[in-house]
Length: 431
Image 1 (tube, rainbow, N blue to C red):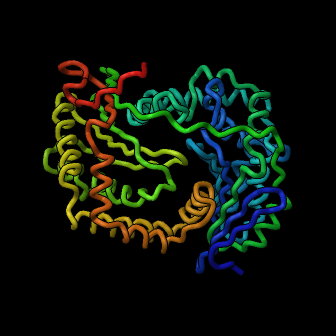
Image 2: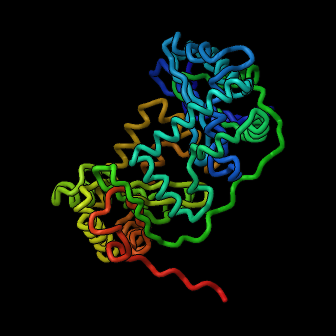
């Protein structure tokens, strides 16, 4: 029988277990989340969180890589993982009747991976290819370049994949030691949604999960103060000029988060947004133009991305700046704010029809807030955002001179610079 609603248990081992039973579902989504990501790595071990994620699928005490790959696929399920800036997640989708197999496989890869030296050497080649692929993909590369500028040398601006040099320097000993420290039981959150029985999953987790007890490692410090800057990396092999702009936002738990989500939606969150309508529909300057708002535990970022013909890059920047300045000076209309609120409501409600999305939401709420916000309360908070709050957020966050500019691609007429995107002068150094 499926438990209904949200439940949380801190298991005797120290692992946090979260479940949300969803009626009328036949499947489950289960994720094992690590409360540390790429931003928490020492600079000399850059990329180690992502590399460990890879190694978890390369063999355990009971399964080789092929058996891991077939473990849930042979049951009609799915097994995967990802590394982010503040977490690592190993997740599975399966029919509810296969919950025991899901718990067994996830515990095996998360707790009993071997880190065999032959597999480490082989996987270095794979990750090197992944890094090269990112370097060759301008849409990925410009994100890395942008983050470097926004976070001013802080760990939030380092590439999640690491570099060829740091990955080459990883060893069985380094991987095993870092794994033991980061995968301690109090760092693990297990979240499940769908046709799941909380007590049954708690029993399975207690039976199968035996995390390591390595020395506790600290999390990274907050980022330094923000300073706008300009950067154009010339790439004459590209047909488009890729442009990215960003400024600092707010943390996940900040009270201004919901007004900023509404503001981002009307700025560049869909086909009806200001940027899409002005840059693509009216001016025909870009195929893809959008904005995003990212929220971390102690900071945030609002960014804009677009790709344009190189000879029209300056024209596109002028148009983006005009939209930002107009929102700062005049604010959005009441109609824009109302439409954005309903757009977000639809996204939240429809997104929670997916048990995978519910599982992710469970984990993020626990990792960032330590408690659960139901989708109904999320929607209520969005609908409670006022026009005045969004107008104030625009005035505070969207000042064009407080954005960094990153450009990647050909440079007709010379590299883009401060004449194309004037920025706020840096404060003088203290005497």
